[in-house]
Amino acid sequence: MIDPNSLPYRPCAGIMLINEDDKVFVGQRIDMPSEHWQMPQGGIDDGEDPLSAAKRELLEEIGTDKAELLLEMEDWVYYDLPHELIGKVWKGRYRGQKQRWFLFQFTGSDADIDIETEHPEFSKWKWTEIKTLVPEIVPFKQDIYQKVVDRFEQFISDSK
Image 1 (cartoon, rainbow, N blue to C red):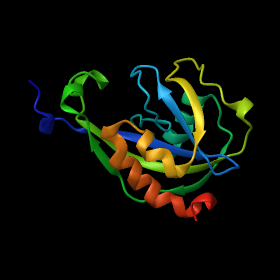
Image 2 (cartoon, rainbow, N blue to C red; image 1 turned 45 degrees about the horizontal axis):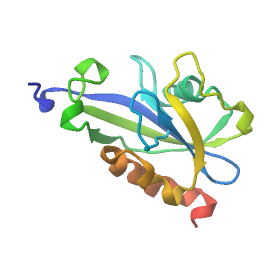
Image 3 (cartoon, helix red, strand yellow; image 1 turned 60 degrees about the vertical axis):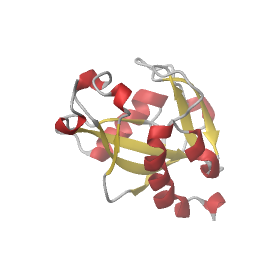
């Protein structure tokens, strides 16, 4: 059995993408079928800075880079994988993720979003209200998402 404390955290960039109606983009993962949703996110490659990774992930996961940066979280946030996933995801190399989150304004139209990318990650997507975002997320990521919402919601007009 793998001791999770012996494993590092995977560096990751996360994106809260909001549309003109101040709704948040979420997708349902192909590899973990469930009723839960998540925002775009992905690993930071060696030598890549978090912002560059975030922009790359937008293009890779939702097929568009039509977005303008509004804000970056100053601190990394961390989560641990549930015990049943340790050793099964990310080739068993990580105990969880350390994430740097970015708030982007979507500048395109819904027609610009194409989740059928070269390596699809989402089976479907939608825009959701920031107030209902956290309960829609897989339970082991809800604490992270609450921190992201707490940091960014003051910049999203419908939550004021």
